[in-house]
Image (cartoon, rainbow, N blue to C red; front, side, top):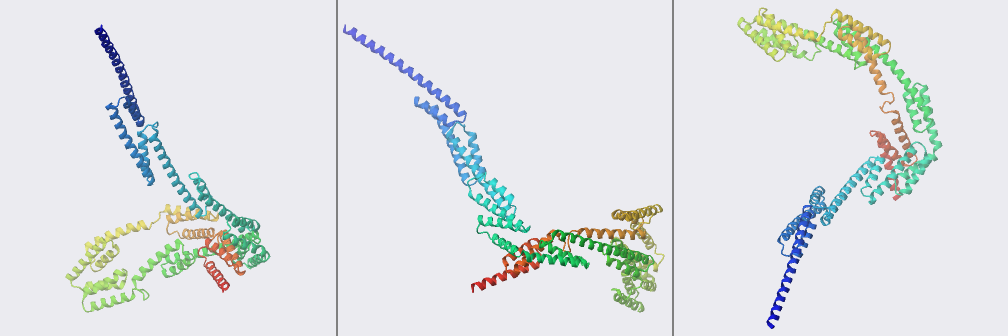
Length: 621
């Protein structure tokens, strides 16, 4: 019985252990399955670059299965990537602090592309990095735009400066410096408006604006000076009007006497004093018309005189009276230095005179003494039978003056006196020199040499052939340079000449000049066409000069600018005479801005400054 009970107990124990073993084994299977699921989920997160999420999953797997080696390896791999990305993120912030925005941006982009947006830890840092870069760039943009505004303000472009400052505020709305700059611009704009009102004579309105300037900026230096000027203008209105009237009356007196330039000066002074401005302008216009009319009469007279001198010059040239021709052309050139027709004939006359001079060198020539010495040496050498030396001296004269008859004759005599062998040798040397001259493009000197050779030995065949060759070349060149018109060309030249006359009668000067220029081109010796071309060109030049000065005075300034300068200058004089030296200085400084070369204004400024210094010294003593 006891054995049975023991057996039953053992059996019960066995059954009980068997049941416990089955229960434990079932739980282990569930944990393993759960760990495997966590590992798989972690891998999926890892593949989506969510490294923190993956680590969390694999950590959960290790809680159920602490010895799971795969989970440990995966966690280690993810942590290495996280460490690398964290280091790159930190490096990005260091670059950002160092101002290397582009490199910092590259780092943050690299990190952003390597992590999942759902991974808040690193992604949030990267977003902060991008925001910091944008903030830095906005600050840089802000600084550059503000600097641009400052540049505009410095150049007086207040509208451009205001636009720049307003735009800059978008990048840094909290910065107070822009507000200060905008306020300063507001003051500058009011000042400019106030100054314009003052210049227009609206003193009451200008006074209100300058008062506003002082309210906004009590330390402004210009406002007190302008307010002082306004007070002076209002107090001295009657006296200043009387001064303007005197300028106007003086202008009228000059106009009646025909002194139109002086009248213009006085009427401009009246305008500068704002006295009878429109009437003064009309008088100035009438003065200009009178001056232009007188200039036209004078120019027409000169044009006809120039044409006369040209025609006479050509006449004397054709008669080979070159000195008379030169005298006439010179007179024409004095009246009109730009005249192309006179210049062309002057060149022809000078060349003809030089050739004439070469035949017999006059005492007035700068070469006279040299030629006389060479003649003496050539004669002395001939007399002592030193013919080669004599040849050399006469040759030197002919190289300077190829047409000098005396030198040619004496050279021939010297060569003929030489013995045949020496003469032949000299002629051969001269021929070689002629060849050398030609090769160096000194054709004129080569021709002279060859003619001298043939004067001594007309049968020198090589010299004959070479001279013919050079003269043929010269004729070809002359044919190109000096065109001989055909009958057809002369007929067409006459037609162009007639057209030119028709245009000239219709006051179409450009068309007339064009027609006569074509006539001269076809027939260079067409004297009447040349003379009329000279007239047309003269008139066109006169018109160009007149139109260039139509709205300008003798100083080349336009009326508006000159009157503005006079206004500032005269105001400065009035202030100075009343002891308002600072006010006077501002007016004369305005003159220098418009006319930097105005020495009188510069001297007056120095005088005014000395008066101020003297007054300061007197006050301190």
